[in-house]
Amino acid sequence: MASLTLANEYTIKSLTMDSLKAIERLNQECSDYYLLHERELSSEKKALEILNELPPGKHYEDKYSLGVFNDINELIGMIDIVRDFPVTGEWMLGLLLIKPKERNHGLGRKIHDALVRWAITLGATSFRIGVIEDNDKGKKF
Image 1 (cartoon, rainbow, N blue to C red):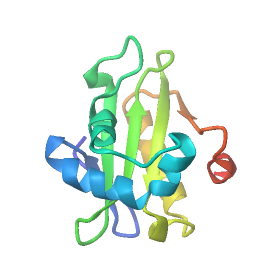
Image 2: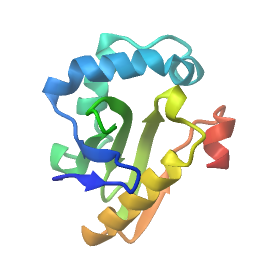
Image 3: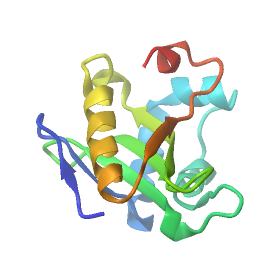
């Protein structure tokens, strides 16, 4: 993925191993998510998992670990998408994590809409969102 620029000057682009420290910082700022999902705070291991973890039968070329960056190139959000999962044509958005101070301003919707348009250009026919059971705000999204 090259990059996607959102109307509000945020940019979505690929995360790499060079992004680990920024991912760790964002994970720490989003401790509410990790306490809800994992029942513990994030660790360095979590940053690696975001980049490396795959569902069964999938390969790295099927996975997109993306970052959302503001106008000063600060990582303020993360996205994890797997294409053709669980079936061909269906894309799974497994993680959309946004820094707390950036939430509740419509950014998540803008990110989602841009990702759907992008995925369609790459052959997606449906776009599924995974939400953990206890995440009431995520369910409303």
